[in-house]
Length: 162
Image (cartoon, rainbow, N blue to C red; front, top):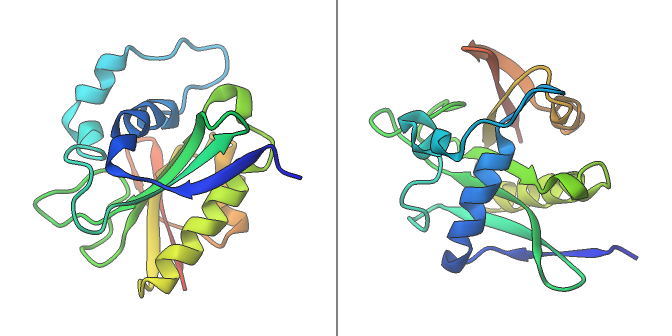
């Protein structure tokens, strides 16, 4: 029995998704988290700005009290409107995070598996993401078949093809 449920995200989840974008920023052990002002940096803000446009899809993990504890989301971008991990206008870009107290419990694996199923069933042929190679989530992405296709700054761009 899981102590969480997964539901489809709605427009009203935007504030929580911004929090998840902040939580998705990898910080090596022992280092302080950056100021939330980092969410205003254009390449980071682009990841969530204007949430709710066509193609935006999120799955939200909820605890037994119906409190959001994690999320995975995909969005489409184009050459004029892109961010970290962008491949092309036909490949949704994935972001994912959990609140720290809920990491390492299989929730991320469940969220990622469900989102890949949703995107595949929606007719997409691939999904991309950006991840710091020191982020423990890298191993999860590799287990789901994501392969490195490039490097952007300190992060890897990765793609899984269906």
